[in-house]
Image 1 (cartoon, rainbow, N blue to C red):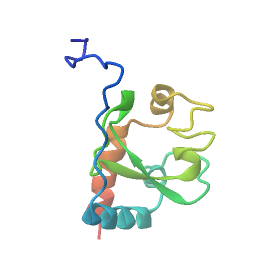
Image 2 (spheres, one colour; image 1 turned 90 degrees about the vertical axis):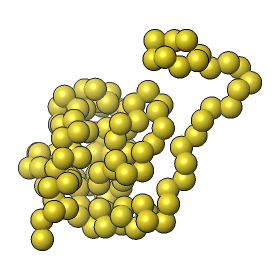
Image 3 (tube, rainbow, N blue to C red; image 1 turned 90 degrees about the horizontal axis):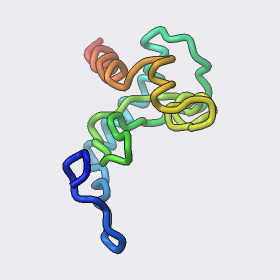
Length: 116
């Protein structure tokens, strides 16, 4: 056992992969994309560029993706130079310290989705 309580990876074993998103989850993603970048709704000053993409929250350390814990981010803030998954200007920790945490984005998305 390692510090996380899981068996250590042994060479030759297959790693568990995330399950593919269901059709209902993909339809929800399209609705979320239509809302625009969540950072704009939160009033965070950033350079919003590119199309809206879906960011999976809570997958740090190579964890499995939860297809229900997603937020819309513009391409620049997702995988671009300033992105949370971009790895160019910010590490994930530094990005969250600079802009906002993934939990804060999930809460903001819940509020925006409830608005008429």
